[in-house]
Image 1 (cartoon, rainbow, N blue to C red):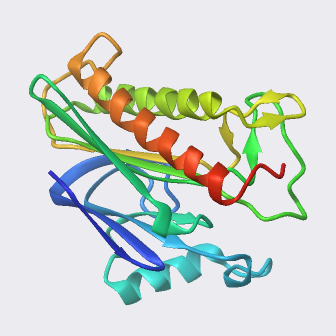
Image 2 (cartoon, one colour; image 1 turned 120 degrees about the vertical axis):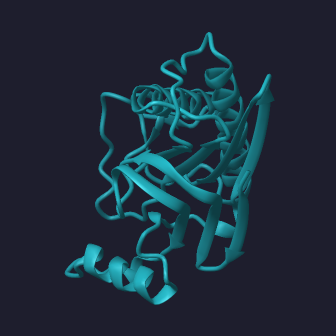
Length: 216
């Protein structure tokens, strides 16, 4: 259904064919049609405070030939990306994630990270079944719920409780255009997306804790 290519600093999730994608990614957010979702690994030195990040990223994507891609930025070492698939009935979900928790947050609170490095969680999930735009919206809510559950189970402690995500998370969901109107937890779509996203995020969080340690 999709293939993943790693060529640091780029990670590419090739969707195989153009699909509808919904995200709040830095490049091509909202409802768009795209054939791939890409990650660009960055360090603080790549993005000085006075830089126009959108202009820089547009030029980077143009040089790579991916201006039409839905694209994330991440400070996580993309060598540690995770991917998981889940098959429920005829529905197959394929999730690719990068998980960094150096700017972890708990919902409803904020931590001052102004003088520290930032990480992020970027999740992309692709489905083999056709969805309406309404179902695509519900699917992104299920993916968000799965991300949050995985991060809470990782038990990263903050002053105001257990982390639920980071301050810069982004999620993208991709699927063919179709007629399915529902993607909730009672559906095969919701179960498949939830399982794939949860497992990919949980494995990424465990790897981050092992590699980086919890220094929040």
